[in-house]
Length: 443
Length: 73
Image (cartoon, rainbow over all chains, first blue to last red; front, top):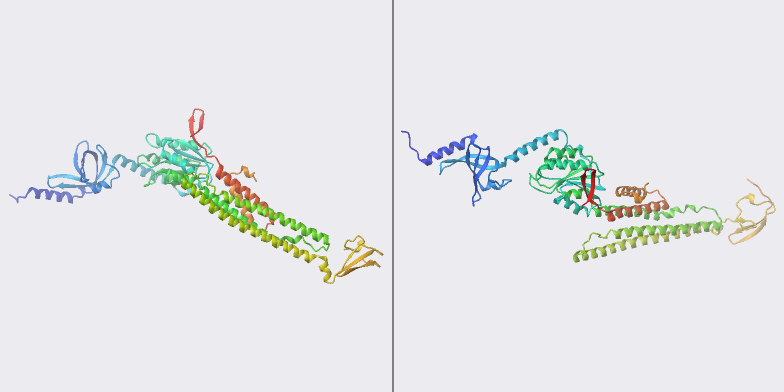
């Protein structure tokens, strides 16, 4: 008789054998859950069975907490774990470290296959991605008419760049959802739509599954209209996300991407107008150089006319510049209108404070602009005076020149205006002398 | 060039950018500069009108026997 061992020893030996066998450790076992017991300790106990056999399973709290789903009676699962011996009872059990729902498991496998196929076809290539138009007239939305997605998009779009929203109502989950979404995308492509948002609000992996189907991927790829995907989920991208021209994490974010922010558009326009008025001011500043019209004709009347014309010119330009600057400032004041401000007391108080600051800023810049124009005008008038003095014929006489006028008092500039015996008057710095022409010689 | 009032926002913005570039490049006399500036003000006002006063229609499409129909939501 060989050595006698205790029951405990027997079970310990069996446990060691089970633990050492790689074919019983770290294996996937498929089966259906039954006799599920949720212990107050947080551990779950159940039986995993198929048509012929069953095995007791334990799912300890730590492993259970990492499961992406809640185990339930009759659920088909793939359980990953190792065989162990429960020494006290001499029964063996399966310790589950993680589980997948087996139906879903098949779906994930198919999904990976689909992703591989579409990727090989180049449907995910960046080169295929089209730019999203910046200022759409109509945004098409393919989603459920009763879901949160369309409500979120309408809400966001009311505060963004104005565009029309056109909804293609579709089923986003359940039987026929993928075909319905694909049909919605195709319908939109027959209409004048500038950008498409295709998606739904958040949900479980199963709720979002339609966006992983080939039909939807093909419809997005075939769309003439650029597509923004908006499937609300945090984890993996759906196939729709991968094929779309742009992926937004939520429907609200998609609306924000499709429609620019109004206030930044207004800022951009105001900046351009500031640049334009800066250039204009520069132009006014150099206006003095434009007094080329003052030629050297020594007719006092012509000189006065020229100066007068330039003065009128200055006044007109100043008037127009003032108009232009005023209109610019009015535009800036309008920027502070808050058309969508709700009239809660706090908002109202805030709005008034904003107005006061805006008005201060506007009057400060208005003062600067107007002062600059007035001082420019003063300089221009001074310059005109200087030029008038420079061409004043009397000043010229002081330099030793004289000029000759005919009987009618007009300045003579050509010998053809006189002949032998003509009466002329010679004007010098301090007086004039009458003379008669003795001889005319033409060059 | 199209009448300003007929332009889309994108067209107006592009025209405005071109005018500002012309002004900044210089070489224009004051008279021409003011003409351009006045045109820029018109475009600016048009852009703001679009941003602030445009209608936002929300409609849904319905497939019927006669084809696609749009209906206000």
